[in-house]
Length: 167
Image 1 (cartoon, helix red, strand yellow):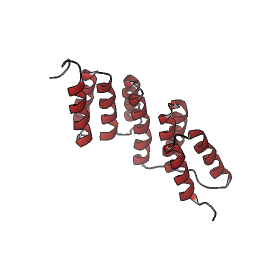
Image 2: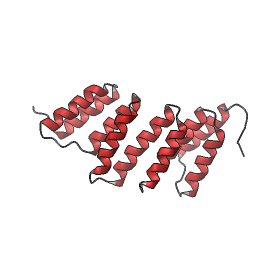
Image 3: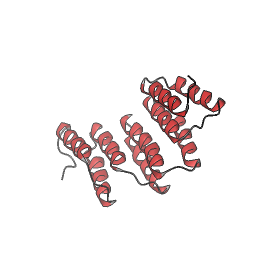
Protein backbone atom coordinates (compact mmCIF):
# COMPACT_ATOMS: atom_id res chain seq x y z
CA UNK A 1 0.00 0.00 0.00
CA UNK A 2 1.38 3.37 -0.99
CA UNK A 3 1.35 6.13 1.61
CA UNK A 4 -1.03 9.02 1.19
CA UNK A 5 -1.09 12.51 2.68
CA UNK A 6 -2.91 11.39 5.83
CA UNK A 7 -0.57 8.49 6.49
CA UNK A 8 2.46 10.77 6.07
CA UNK A 9 1.01 13.27 8.56
CA UNK A 10 0.27 10.45 10.99
CA UNK A 11 3.85 9.20 10.71
CA UNK A 12 5.24 12.72 11.19
CA UNK A 13 3.13 13.17 14.31
CA UNK A 14 4.20 9.77 15.64
CA UNK A 15 7.88 10.59 15.13
CA UNK A 16 7.39 13.97 16.81
CA UNK A 17 5.64 12.35 19.78
CA UNK A 18 8.62 10.00 20.10
CA UNK A 19 10.91 13.08 19.96
CA UNK A 20 12.49 11.77 16.77
CA UNK A 21 12.36 15.21 15.17
CA UNK A 22 15.23 14.71 12.71
CA UNK A 23 13.45 11.68 11.29
CA UNK A 24 10.21 13.68 11.10
CA UNK A 25 12.00 16.32 9.03
CA UNK A 26 13.42 13.61 6.74
CA UNK A 27 9.89 12.30 6.29
CA UNK A 28 8.70 15.83 5.44
CA UNK A 29 11.36 15.97 2.72
CA UNK A 30 10.31 12.55 1.45
CA UNK A 31 6.71 13.77 1.33
CA UNK A 32 7.75 16.74 -0.78
CA UNK A 33 9.97 14.62 -3.03
CA UNK A 34 7.01 12.32 -3.70
CA UNK A 35 4.77 15.27 -4.57
CA UNK A 36 2.66 15.38 -1.43
CA UNK A 37 1.54 18.69 -0.02
CA UNK A 38 3.19 19.71 3.23
CA UNK A 39 0.26 21.43 4.90
CA UNK A 40 -0.30 23.28 8.16
CA UNK A 41 -1.01 20.01 9.95
CA UNK A 42 2.43 18.74 8.94
CA UNK A 43 4.15 22.01 9.84
CA UNK A 44 2.34 22.37 13.18
CA UNK A 45 3.35 18.83 14.11
CA UNK A 46 6.95 19.68 13.25
CA UNK A 47 6.75 22.96 15.21
CA UNK A 48 5.57 20.96 18.21
CA UNK A 49 8.50 18.59 17.77
CA UNK A 50 11.01 21.41 17.48
CA UNK A 51 9.66 23.01 20.63
CA UNK A 52 9.86 19.69 22.52
CA UNK A 53 13.58 19.43 21.79
CA UNK A 54 14.13 23.19 22.13
CA UNK A 55 14.97 23.81 18.47
CA UNK A 56 13.22 27.19 18.54
CA UNK A 57 15.02 28.49 15.44
CA UNK A 58 13.61 25.63 13.38
CA UNK A 59 10.18 26.21 14.94
CA UNK A 60 10.30 29.87 13.90
CA UNK A 61 11.29 28.95 10.33
CA UNK A 62 8.31 26.60 10.17
CA UNK A 63 6.07 29.33 11.57
CA UNK A 64 7.23 31.57 8.73
CA UNK A 65 6.20 28.80 6.31
CA UNK A 66 2.76 28.58 7.92
CA UNK A 67 2.33 32.37 7.85
CA UNK A 68 3.49 32.70 4.23
CA UNK A 69 0.83 30.33 2.88
CA UNK A 70 -2.92 30.76 2.85
CA UNK A 71 -4.14 29.18 6.06
CA UNK A 72 -6.77 29.56 8.72
CA UNK A 73 -6.31 31.84 11.69
CA UNK A 74 -6.76 28.71 13.82
CA UNK A 75 -3.67 27.12 12.25
CA UNK A 76 -1.67 30.29 12.90
CA UNK A 77 -2.92 30.44 16.48
CA UNK A 78 -1.87 26.82 17.01
CA UNK A 79 1.59 27.49 15.57
CA UNK A 80 2.18 30.62 17.66
CA UNK A 81 0.74 29.06 20.81
CA UNK A 82 2.96 26.01 20.45
CA UNK A 83 6.03 28.25 20.41
CA UNK A 84 4.76 30.43 23.28
CA UNK A 85 4.09 27.32 25.36
CA UNK A 86 7.51 25.88 24.55
CA UNK A 87 9.31 29.07 25.53
CA UNK A 88 7.33 29.30 28.77
CA UNK A 89 7.92 25.65 29.61
CA UNK A 90 11.65 26.02 28.96
CA UNK A 91 11.73 28.77 31.59
CA UNK A 92 11.96 31.75 29.24
CA UNK A 93 8.68 33.37 30.24
CA UNK A 94 9.86 36.82 29.14
CA UNK A 95 10.46 35.50 25.61
CA UNK A 96 7.08 33.73 25.71
CA UNK A 97 5.32 36.97 26.70
CA UNK A 98 7.24 38.90 24.02
CA UNK A 99 6.31 36.30 21.43
CA UNK A 100 2.67 36.58 22.50
CA UNK A 101 2.98 40.35 21.90
CA UNK A 102 4.40 39.61 18.44
CA UNK A 103 1.47 37.31 17.86
CA UNK A 104 -0.95 40.19 18.51
CA UNK A 105 1.14 42.55 16.33
CA UNK A 106 0.62 40.05 13.51
CA UNK A 107 -3.12 40.17 14.14
CA UNK A 108 -3.29 36.68 15.62
CA UNK A 109 -5.36 36.66 18.79
CA UNK A 110 -3.92 34.62 21.66
CA UNK A 111 -6.40 32.11 23.02
CA UNK A 112 -6.92 30.64 26.47
CA UNK A 113 -4.21 28.03 25.83
CA UNK A 114 -1.70 30.75 24.92
CA UNK A 115 -2.40 32.77 28.05
CA UNK A 116 -2.45 29.70 30.28
CA UNK A 117 0.98 28.66 28.98
CA UNK A 118 2.49 32.01 30.01
CA UNK A 119 0.68 31.92 33.37
CA UNK A 120 1.93 28.39 34.06
CA UNK A 121 5.48 29.30 33.06
CA UNK A 122 5.46 32.38 35.27
CA UNK A 123 4.15 30.48 38.28
CA UNK A 124 6.69 27.69 37.75
CA UNK A 125 9.37 30.35 38.13
CA UNK A 126 7.57 31.82 41.14
CA UNK A 127 6.72 35.03 39.28
CA UNK A 128 3.27 35.58 40.75
CA UNK A 129 3.10 39.19 39.51
CA UNK A 130 3.64 38.09 35.87
CA UNK A 131 1.01 35.38 36.27
CA UNK A 132 -1.56 37.83 37.62
CA UNK A 133 -0.70 40.44 34.99
CA UNK A 134 -1.17 37.85 32.25
CA UNK A 135 -4.43 36.64 33.81
CA UNK A 136 -5.77 40.22 33.93
CA UNK A 137 -4.60 40.89 30.37
CA UNK A 138 -6.44 37.76 29.25
CA UNK A 139 -9.65 39.01 30.85
CA UNK A 140 -9.21 42.51 29.40
CA UNK A 141 -8.82 41.00 25.94
CA UNK A 142 -12.09 39.10 26.30
CA UNK A 143 -10.56 35.64 26.64
CA UNK A 144 -12.40 33.57 29.23
CA UNK A 145 -10.34 31.51 31.64
CA UNK A 146 -11.10 27.81 31.55
CA UNK A 147 -10.62 24.94 33.97
CA UNK A 148 -6.96 24.60 32.92
CA UNK A 149 -6.29 28.27 33.60
CA UNK A 150 -7.86 28.14 37.05
CA UNK A 151 -6.05 24.90 37.85
CA UNK A 152 -2.73 26.49 36.84
CA UNK A 153 -3.43 29.60 38.92
CA UNK A 154 -4.55 27.72 42.03
CA UNK A 155 -1.78 25.14 41.85
CA UNK A 156 0.88 27.75 41.11
CA UNK A 157 -0.28 30.15 43.80
CA UNK A 158 -0.50 27.40 46.41
CA UNK A 159 3.00 26.18 45.66
CA UNK A 160 4.42 29.71 45.47
CA UNK A 161 6.68 30.74 48.30
CA UNK A 162 4.90 33.53 50.13
CA UNK A 163 2.14 35.56 48.59
CA UNK A 164 4.16 38.25 46.85
CA UNK A 165 1.94 39.73 44.18
CA UNK A 166 -1.25 38.06 45.31
CA UNK A 167 -4.00 40.61 45.60
